[in-house]
Length: 115
Image: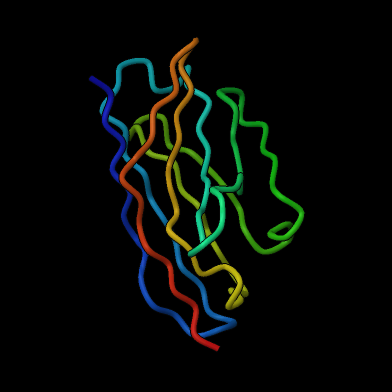
């Protein structure tokens, strides 16, 4: 059973920073594609960022230049560094892991940006 546990969410003022972490209880974490998604109230879940097992990253346009994604395979952890936060970044952020044909999700962590 794969478990993903997010942490690091909270309340921050606009312009501030937060660092989200997602620890995976999974063998062969280094082989997994990892990502972050978010869901704002009344909206569909949307892609935020992803990092391949080779370290290649991609981001939704709205966070480019502000967010970075990284991974520490020794700790089975993926990070999302969020800088210059805006009120529109307010959402529940979910960690995502893709291993072969299987996709796994964490329980989510709330990020609230006050303007």
